Image 1 (cartoon, protein in one colour):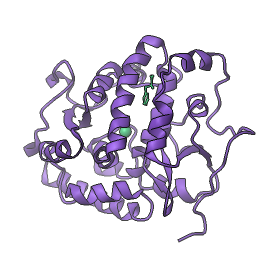
Image 2: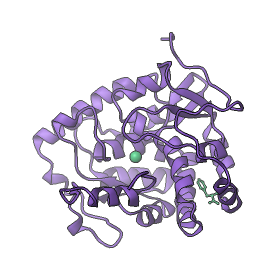
Image 3: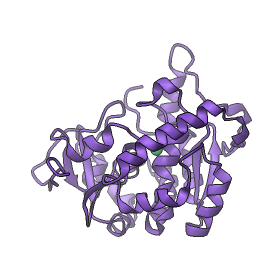
Amino acid sequence: MDAIVSRDDFLKSLAEKSDGGKLRGNYAAADPLYVVAQDWAGYTREQHALWQKLYRRQANLAAGRACEEVIDSLRRLDAADAVPQFERISDVLFKATRWRLVAVPGLVPDQVFFEHLANRRFPVTVWLREPYEFDYIAEPDVFHDFFGHVPLLFNPIFADYLQEYGKGGLKALKLDGLKYLARLYWYTIEFGLIESPGGLRVYGAGILSSGGEIDYCLRSGKPHRIRFDLERVMRTLYKIDSYQDTYFVIDCFERLFDSTAPDFTQLYKRLITLDTLPADTLLAGDRLVASLAGRR
Ligand code: PHE
Ligand code: CO
C-alpha cells in the first residue's frame, strides 16, 4: 500500500500491519451503517477531564485563528466541560441545519461515510485519545471529529457543501474519481483556510483540532498558501503524517460551494491526463496569499 487516498485505504493499510492492524474502536457492535450507541455513561472521570483540557487549550488557540463561523458555533455548543452527549447536540444541530450526529466506532468505509453525509448525518467517533496523545493522533477520535467538524455543520452553506460532497462521493466511486475527490476533502474540509473580513483564518477540521498547526498554518513562512482552484487542488498530493506543505485559501463558503457544484464527470476524465503534483509544488499560475506572520 503506497498512497492513502481514502478511508478504505487507511482501513486496508491497518489490516496489512504485522500486528493485524488493530482498529481502536469496537466494530463488532456496529450496525450495517457502522452506527453504534455512544455509551456516554461509559466515559470515565479521567476522560472527561482530558476532554476539558483539550477543549480549553484548543478554544483559546481558536480565538483570532478560527473563522467567526466556527467561534460562534463553539459558543452555542456548550461542550467545554465534558465529552458531549451526541444526542443533545444532534437535536440542537437538527434545528439549525437539519444535520444529525451519529456515533461510529472509528473510521468507516468510504461508501458508508458518503452515504451518511449525503443524508445529512455526520459520523462522530466515540473513543477519546489517551493522555500521551494529547498533541498528536494519527486517527480521528471524538475530539477531532467533534471539535473540528461539528461547529461548521451549523453554517447553512457549509452544511449544504458537505451533503453535496457526500453525494459527489457516491458518484465518484462509480466514476473512479475518488482520489481526486479525496484531495478536495483534505484541502477544504480538513485543512482549509479562509480569507475572512478579519484576515486569514482557519476552517478545516484537521487544523482546528491541532495544537500546533492552528498557528503554524497562519504564520509559518514555510508552507505555501494558494488561492483555491478546484483543478489545482484535485491534482495535489497531501501529507498525512506532518503539517501540510500547502494550504488552499477560499474567500467564502458560497464561492466554494458554487465552484464545486458543476458535474465532475468531465473533470475526472481531464485529471487523468494531467500530472499529479507533489504537496510542496508551486506553479507559475498559483496565486499566493500572505501569511499572518508578524501580525498580532
Ligand atoms: N459537483 C460534484 C460532482 O458532480 C459533487 C460535489 C459537490 C463534490 C460538492 C464535492 C463538493 O461530482
Ligand atoms: Co476529520
